[in-house]
Amino acid sequence: QLQLQESGPGLVKPSETLSLTCTVSGGSISSSSYYWGWIRQPPGKGLEWIGSIYYSGSTYYNPSLKSRVTISVDTSKNQFSLKLSSVTAADTAVYYCARHSRVAGTLDYWGQGTLVTVSS
Amino acid sequence: DIQMTQSPSSLSASVGDRVTITCQASQDISNYLNWYQQKPGKAPKLLIYDASNLETGVPSRFSGSGSGTDFTFTISSLQPEDIATYYCQQYDNLPPEHTFGQGTKLEIK
Image (cartoon, rainbow over all chains, first blue to last red; front, side, top):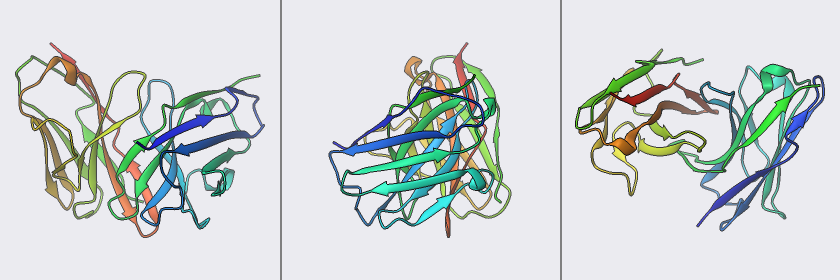
């Protein structure tokens, strides 16, 4: 059974960089059929796609966040990571990692999510 | 960018009721439309893919329809365990990009 697990600091100061890692177990991140993505959800609000990465390293970002986002992959560790720079309180959210099909875009496996709070 | 308009934002219904949620795309998205259920404190769960296909293991009371710009999600007979927020999601694969609807919070009357 595929499992995804987010990890990283739960508190980040304004103007600093948020860094999270997603560890994939029970399957290979190097599958040619899937992308690996980050989605966030501010408290009490809806879902926002941040970006996705292919095992080769090709990345795709939400245009509204593109200038601040970097997603990378480490196939040797079966992990992918998110960096979001210059954070503000508006970036406070539950951050999810997920797998999605290259064709249908179905987000079929999700991590449990991790709350990141931006505060001094 | 494609915008997704989901309605209603909230809905109250009784057990056994038929419940319908709609999602409208700002341009033709063919059938690249998926539906998710999210319970409080949990990650979203895929229910319907490609507008009308039921994900494995999902009860048959859930269904989806539509193509182009107008889509519908239906629960044929509402059960207490269906209380959740439901999201539509559009997917563009050239390049990969996801857009979610605003969500519909479903409550028991």
